[in-house]
Image (tube, rainbow, N blue to C red; front, top):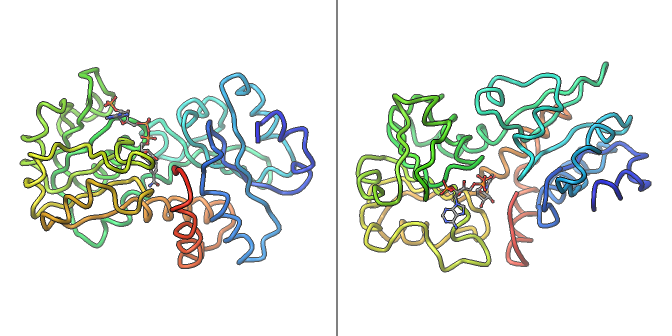
Length: 291
Ligand code: NAP
C-alpha cells in the first residue's frame, strides 16, 4: 500500500511496524514478522508500505503516529532515511545505511540500526575467520558485507564493480578494500577464501544467469561461495560452485537473521526461527523475491 493511502487508512489506529521502500509488494518481511508476532501474542501488525520519492516528505508524519512501533527500511531509502533520524548505532553510522528504525518508548526519539551486517555475518560464524574475500557488486548489501568482514578481521577485500567509479568503502578502507572490475575477477577469486554475490544476477526470474563466467567457475574449488539472493534458494552460481566442491551459503539465513535482530530490537523477544523459515520457504516458488 502507498504511504499516502496507509496514512489515510484505519491500519494506523492500531500499533504497527512496517517496511518502508519502493517497491515493497514482493517483500517477505510482513509474512515472517507477522508469524513471529502471532507466535509471541504481541498485539502489533507488520505492514509493507510503499514510499516512492514523491512521498518521502510524508515519512515524518508516519514516525510521529502513536501506533508507530518501528520500521524496516529497504531499497531505495536505506541511506536517505538517515536524515530523518535522531541517532545512529555504530555500525549504521560507519556504513551510512539503515535498515531498522527503533523509536524510544518514552520520548519517541528515533535510532537507526543496520541489522544486514549481523544477518550477513551470522552464517559465516561457523566457518572461522575469513582472511580474504571477493565481493561482487557495490550497493547497500556490499557495504554491509564489507563492514562485517572488516569488523571480523578480514585483511583483503576485492570489491568488484561493472564500472570503475570511486566507491566509498574502498576510499574509507584503502588498506583492506581494493576496487576492481570484472576484468580482474580471476585474480580476485584466486586471492580470496570467500566469494560473495551481492548483485541481483541470478535472482528470480533470471534463474539461469550467474555473475561468474563459466571459465572461472573451476577456481571456486575449495573456496566458500556465498550468494545473498534467497530466491531461488540455490542460485546458478551456488550450483556451479557446489559442483566444483566449494562450500556454499544461500541468502535465506541472512534474510532471517537480519529480521530476527530487528524483531529483538523492537520487542525484546527472539524470532521463532524454525517457524519463520518454514513461512518463507513455503512462499518462495510462488513469484519474485527480495527483502
Ligand atoms: P543495490 O544497492 O541495487 O546494489 C546492487 C549492486 O549490484 C549494484 O550496486 C551494482 O554494482 C551491481 N549490479 C546491479 N545490477 C547488476 C547487473 N545487472 N549485473 C551486474 N552487477 C549488477 O542492491 P542491494 O541492496 O545491495 O541488494 C543486492 C541484492 O542482494 C538484491 O538481489 C537483494 O535482493 C539482495 N539482498 C539480500 C539480502 C538478504 O537478507 N538475503 C539483504 C539485502 C539484499 P556495480 O554498479 O558497481 O556493478
